[in-house]
Structure formats: C-alpha cells, structure tokens
Picture: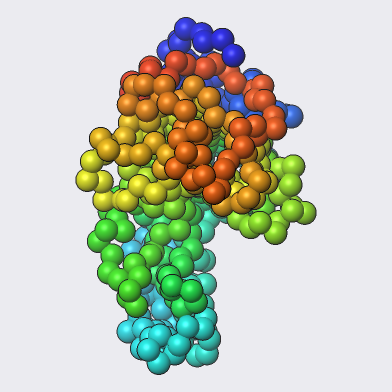
Length: 423
C-alpha cells in the first residue's frame, strides 16, 4: 500500500461536506465502506433532524421514524441516569425487592456461600434492580441514523448506545463517559470476580457502521477508586465498544479510547460459529489508545484490520497494561503501521496475547518508541510454548490511505477524539 500525502480533509477523517452531520464514510475507508457503505442519516429532510439536550429527548428522537434517515444532534451533557423530569437517579433509586449491596455481600460471602454462582432471593432482587437501570441507560439505535455531538463539549454520561440489528449508522463527535453498572454480579467460581453490564456503544448484529471522532473514557469513576470485595475489584464497568453477535462491516476512526480496562471486544463467545463466522469484519485506523488495560481489540472470528493507530501507555498510569492485541478463536487480525509509545522497560512482547492454539496474525511495520519492532517475533520469543503463526489468511484492500508509523503519534494526538471536528 503506497504512502500518500495527508490533506486536512483526510486528517479529519470525513467526506467533503460543509456539515459534519451530513458526512458519509468515504469510499474505500475500511470494512464499513464495503457493500452499500455508510451514509447514516445524511439524506434526512428537515423534519427528521433533531437537536436534543436531555435523556428523554434523546430517547424520543431515537424511537421516532423507524428506518427513515434521521440526524440526532446532541448538545451539551446528557446523563442517562435521569428520570422523565430530568432529575438525577442514583443506584438507590433503581434498587428494588429489598436489594442492598450490604445484603448481597452478606448473602454470597464465599466463607459461607461457597464458590457457586449466586442464586435465591437476593440475586433475584439484584436482577430486578438491574432491569430498572437498564430501562433508563440502554438507548436503542435504529437504522439509517447519524448521532453527532453538536460542538466541542457534547457528552453522554452513564449511557449505552445500543445498535441491535441496525444498519447504516454513524456515531460521531461524542464523549462517552462512565457507563457504570449499579448492580454487578459476583461470580465466585474459579478465583472469583465481579461482572458488570453496559458498554458505551454496542453493535450487535448491525452492519455498515462508522464510529468516528469520539472519546471513550471511565472519566469521573475510574476503577482505581473502586473498593474490593471478596478479594476482587468491585468492577462497575464493562467495555467501551463491543462488536458482537454477527455484526459486520464496521469502520472505527479517529477516536480516543482512554482510562479503561477491558475495552473493545469483537466476538463474545468461542461457540458463536453460526452467527460470527464470516462476520465481524472491522477496520480500526488513526485511533489513540491511551492508558488502556487490554482488548484494543480482542478478536474472535473476524477479519480485523488495525493500522495507523497510536498505542500510548504513560508511566504510572492508573490502569495496568496487560496487552493490546488479543488473538482469540478463529481470529484473523492484521496489524500494520501502528505506533506504540511505551514506558522504559516495557517488554514489546506484552503487546500481544494469544488464547487459542493454532491461531495466527499478520503483523508488519509497527514501531515501538520510534523504532521498527517485530512484535509477533517478540511475542513468540517470550512464549515458546504458545507460538503465534504469521499469516492471518487475508490481505486488507479497503484502506483509504496509510501513514508512516513515525508520523502516526503526532497526527493521531492532534486530530483524534471528540471536539476535533470543524463544526
């Protein structure tokens, strides 16, 4: 793939248009451009352009006009944990049937309950309470929709944009912060852990989606401020972006993903061969992954193209660096022309983690701290008993342009994230 000179338009990652809300994914720009491409709500007439400032207005706009092209502009900050009157809701407001955290901890303390999954009245109360929260914070997204932040400070707090079976969707210029679960479930099996719900964006069975110029972060509620119960972190965050259940043809560009642990999941089960095999085709380019724990991304099944991204870990970051690229069941990850900025002493082999035996990836021309580094060979040298093959089995063809890895940190740091579009 030749390296071309960057233009201002290319740096912004958008098609030529005076109004970013009517931008479409450029032809040839990643997997999202395959098939019919991504136009979102760009063809919306004036009657189907909505400006929203509250959770209730956003939910109403999302519910209207199923399938008709529409544009939803979000102004200012919308907190999904609010009632119809706009009053903030707390976890206590969702709790029902006698649920309390104290009662839950007492009921399922491994010292008395053992190491089985919770069941019984307090677990039933947790499920009912969780359903109350889900009704408020999970916001369904339909087909032929553009959702865009209006201006530099548009923000969705505590909410999930949930595109299930939707087609032709654009999500741009939003800061997604702190999609937290009030009612995590204790899993006492194995070593024990807390499991939570709610990702910032979920693409489940959706096709032709463009996620561009957003910022994803735990923000006001970092995991480092959470307590531990039963020797495990009380984890109230799930992922940032999940592409699952047969979703296909997605392009993810010019976003900032920061301050989070388990971040991007592509495929959520090794057993999902019927829905996921041949799907989950996704492109990531020109994103900043800063101070991330893992899963950027973790891949099952999909042909995933990851190029020209900047992976930056700062010394002393609150989130422990586990790995960047997760190679899972039947994954086909191509990772090329990326740049890593890692603290001194970080072993480049940790950039990759492999789960499934017999898996491979294509890894070429990636840089670590300004120098070309063969990350797959570094992984294999450090893990001689779990060797990773060198061919993902396919070659990306949908790349609008490719930048030299040395230039990627400057370009991505300057242009990625919410608030960087010229509105």
